[in-house]
Structure formats: structure tokens, C-alpha cells
Image 1 (cartoon, rainbow, N blue to C red):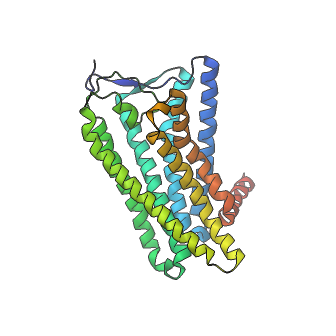
Image 2: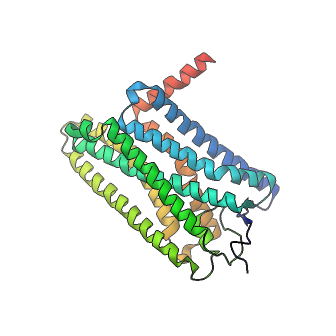
Image 3: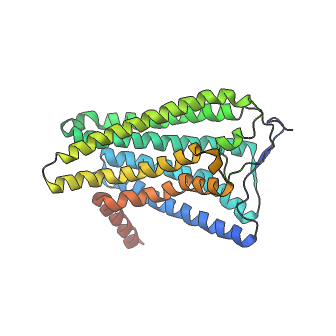
Length: 310
């Protein structure tokens, strides 16, 4: 039996037994991280450098790209290091930092997706009030509230998790530190106080989910009343990327954390963790840029301008 005061490091899940598979996993992590860094970096640069993109939708998209970059940089570097050097260790402090930043960026992304849904709702359902409800000051306040709320939530969640006594060893069944895996190591009945934060999480997450669903019901009702086919197509083209990103994010997280215990297996848990932690940051830039002509044009100008200079 061990407790948290005697644990100096955790053992992450070994992704492969052979050296060839370890190097293959390293290459996969490298490819996903480079795709995420390139895509989100281009979006951030394009929005920051293109004055005609200084609008609420693109401002929130820039914030979303920043959260995606932070998320991918939280989990992937350590996983790549472990694959390359054939190790499983992560320090106690490093694990706590990884939990904090992963929860921070994931929560920020969820809040930002909810705010972006509100942006789409006002744009389509209340276009005459768009400038008033989503002015530059209001957008800055909403983005700041998303980041600050996520920071506070992550700080409380991390502090509470790592204050629990651990009696089940130090081996985690995941390639990065996450709260459910650490709770599995806690002493019996010691995680009851964590249930308070879990209840808050469920209520908060459910509230955002209900708001998103309600907003899209109103959006689709408004779209159906648009007389011109071109207008309906334009409205759908601005909403579809956001809807796809929200669906990808929520479906993987909900299935990963709410699936029946009978369906749980190491391979399934690992696959789901890759889906909700690595795939969205890499795919989000592609999803948004494919359907948005303004963003696509800005990214193309940025890339061609860079190549001309070099």
C-alpha cells in the first residue's frame, strides 16, 4: 500500500512492447502534433494579420485555435518522449501540471464552442442586434470569462484530485495523466469529496449542452424562413463547421466517460482518449477552413506571401 505523500512519480501506459511499434507511435504523435501546430498556427496568423477578419466569429475562432494548441502541447510531447526513449515515467509534479493544463484547455474549448454557438444564433436569428450584442468589448469580456472560468475550474479540480490519498499504486492506464485514472488509484471512499466537483461539472456541461441544442433549434427554424436559397446556403455554411466540431468534441467525451463499465477495455479507452484529446485540435482548423471562403482566402494569402518572401 502506498499513499500520495510517498509517490514521487507515476507510470503511464506503455503503448507498445516492441521498439518498432514504439517508433511508429512516435511518428504518429509527431504527425498529429505537426498537423495541429500548422493548422492552428495558420488560423491564428491569418486572423491576426487580416483586418477584414477582425469580426466576432473569427475572434472566437482564434481563441479556439489557441486552446487547441495548448491542448496538443500538454499531452503529446511527453508521450513522444516516452515512445522515443522507451520509458513510462512522469513526475508527480509533471502529472499534476498535465492534469491542470489538459482540464484548463478542454474546459476553455467547451466554453468557447458555447460562445461561438451564441454568436451564430445572434447572427442568424437577431441580425439587427448583432453589433450591439457582440461588440468588441462584449466579445473580449466573453472570451476572458471563458479563459478565467476554465482556469479557476481546472485549479480547483487539480488541487482536489491531488489532495486525495492514493492507495492503489502509481500505474495509470492512460498515455497521459487524467483525473479518472488518478481517481482509480485513490483509497476507498476517499474520492467522495471529488463527487461535489463532478456534480458541478455535470451541471455546467449539461447547461452548456442544453444552450447549444436550444440555439441550434432556433437557428434551423430561422434558416427555414429565409426566402432565398443562396441565403439559406450561406447561413448553413457558417453553422455547419461549428456543429461538426461541437459534435466531434462532445460525442467522444460523452462516450469515453459515460460508457457502461462492461464496454471498457484498455484498447477502447486508449482509442477514445486519442479521439477526444488529439483528433479535435488537428481537425478543427481543417473543418473551419474548408467551409469558410474568407478564412481560406486569408490563409492562402498568408502562405503565398510567406513563400514569396523566402
